[in-house]
Image: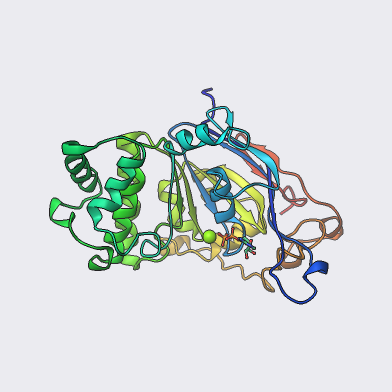
Amino acid sequence: MTAPLVEVENLTRHFAAKRGLFTWAAPPIRAVEDVSFSIAPGEVMGLVGESGSGKSTIGRTLLRLVEPTRGTVRFRGDDIGTVPAGALRKLRRHMQIVFQDPYASLDPRKRVEDIIGDILDIHGLASGPQRRPRVVELLSEVGLGPDHLNRFPHQFSGGQRQRISIARALASNPDFIVADEPVSALDVSVQAQIVNLLADLRRRHGLTMLFVSHDLSIVEYLSDRVIVLYLGRIVELAPARELYARPRHPYTRALLSATPVPDPDAKRARIVLSGELPSPANPPSGCVFHTRCPHATDICKREVPRLEETSPGHTVACWRKDEI
Ligand code: ADP
Ligand code: MG
């Protein structure tokens, strides 16, 4: 087996509660709790969970845009938590992020040529007469033309803006991209185009990706493996096809039952979860999912289930996985 490109071990991130009355007594927000996984070179790992489950925090800690409270992240074997600032800057060239909202993440005062060209400058990748042709090349990679060079972000549609963000992420020739809900803010009709673009780019450049979404049906197409996250914890991790065909965790089953299936005869019975997503400042004891789980028993309330392998590469954290 080849060495992983990205290795995450026991990653935990707590945030202090927002300032206000009595914050000295407020428990921390447990955004990410003891998460471990690795991504092989060229692999796309899907990361799925409801809003607030810790997806963005994980994505950002991988690039050290957020510091972990505990745990390590290794990139090509280097612990990115301990590399000196200079080396981190060099490492950053190889890891990029595409955000959900391409409007907020693009400087409205810059023309496209500079939005992308500035990245080339920062990393010393193309200057002088080489700069513009390289920007044009990057634009064509994402389906835009040279006539777009002089335009500002507001002159583009949402889908086009996300293409610009992707071109900017590609500018430094990264090996690894965190795509943090890159299509969630787009019209449904445009979502598939951007997912297809990412799939093309991945094939052409052998990109490794963490593809984040709150929607299981969106990660299915692109991902080799998928992580299902609940309240900052991994509840299930499996090869994509296996996860969709044989989900083992009750939470994954509930999520899947809510996604449309193309074949109407294969309709899944809709599983409706009771109650609200608990607060990560006050997570339930034992299995954090027990308050919403239709199968919860006593042990689920008391003890945290560990991730265990149920078939090759398929791990599930559920006390009742063998009975349900
Ligand atoms: P997701 O991307 O899955 O929606 P996030 O990683 O953004 O989830 O957030 C996970 C939890 O951590 C949420 O409860 C969120 O409010 C909290 N959180 C995220 N960033 C911060 C921050 N900088 N300060 C305080 N709380 C935060
Ligand atoms: Mg998020």
